[in-house]
Each structure stands twice: as C-alpha cells, then as structure tokens.
Length: 234
Ligand code: DC
Image 1 (cartoon, rainbow, N blue to C red):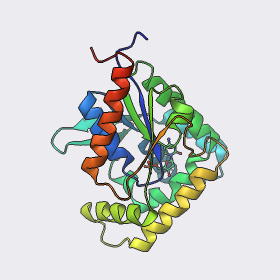
Image 2: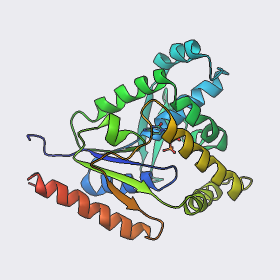
Image 3: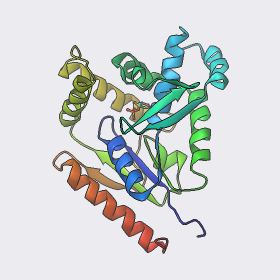
C-alpha cells in the first residue's frame, strides 16, 4: 500500500456517540472528520425549507444539484459547523423537526446516490474518519478500520436529551427522544437501499457500560494497532 493513512468507518445506531468518537479519532490522528448524518440532515432541511413533499421525487431530484454541503471547523467553539450553500445550518439540522424527517429522506435513492458519491470522493486520498450508517458497507467498503457502535436505547436517549438541553431545548421530553431513536433505528435498519448493518469485518463497541474516556482509549488502540499492522506509522 502506498498511502500513509487509512480510512476509518464508524457506523451504528442513532445517538450512540459515533460523532464524538469519530471527532476524537480524527483529532488524534490528524485526519479529516466527516459527519455523513449531517449531510442527510442538510438535504432534509433544504426539502423542508422549500416546502417539497417527501413523495415528490422529481422536485427532490431537481433540488439536489442546487445543494452544496460543506463543513467548517469553528476553532472558538471547538465544533464542526455544517454549511449549506455557504450558510451555517448546524443548529437547524439538529432540531426535532429535522430528526423526525431525516430517516424518510435518507431512504430516497436519488438522495443516497447524490451523497454517497460525494462521501466516496472525500475518502479517495485516505486519512478520513467518517461516521454514519452505511460507511463500512457502502461508502468505504475497503476502510482499513471499521467500528460498529451500539448501546441500550434508554442510555442513548438520555445522552441525546442532555445534549438537547445544553443547546437550549427545554421542551422535548425523554419519551419523545426515545421514540425518535427507536423509530429511526427501525427505519434505518429495514430500508431496502443500503440499510444500517454491521459490516462483516467491523469491530463492535457497545458503550452502554463504558465511559467516553474508556471508549476513546479503546478506539485509539484499534486505530494505532491497525496503522502499525499495515506498516504505515512512519
Ligand atoms: O447520524 P445522524 O443521527 O445525524 O443521522 C441522521 C439520519 O441520517 C439517520 O437517522 C439516517 C441517515 N443516515 C443515513 O441514512 N446514512 C448515513 N451514512 C448517515 C445517516
């Protein structure tokens, strides 16, 4: 292998902390972090903003070429911001409204084709940590390291609720978050087009009973182990 870097795919259920782990790994390895879920959320937001019916495939197909999705690191906030045609949409894409529509939107073939093509292109030169649902199976089937994350739904819902509260959402209840997670897990894993599925060669991390630090150290060990085994650590 000539490349000095590897690609890391992190897939798993909703609100398992995939993004947190992917960001930590990317920072540690000086790799690029890509939140593929944010890309599906950006398309969902654009569909909602344009009052397009979810079943109107023609209107959605016409909309897609007009969408430029990018990411920007905000050094002050220590946070990645998602941009849609240059506008910061990071807050809007995390609302419950977008969360409720994103699974149906991500089932649409034209949407997946549009985003998967971009995601594959980002990974061509390696050095990418991407989190999502189909990264190890469809986007980077040849990723050198694949991690599949899971945790008990109640634990995930509580973490997600804490995040929403920190962002100022005081209305959403635990039950609503739990219902949204369960519904998205079901829709994401039963859709026909690239469903959420553990890649055969993925390593499972269940973080129900391990904390963020333990999980981080485990992932670093996996990444450095892989890099070393491929002779790429020079
Ligand atoms: O990672 P997230 O929860 O922000 O993702 C939002 C939704 O986007 C998720 O419910 C399913 C969809 N998604 C997908 O279908 N494929 C991906 N690679 C990433 C996300």
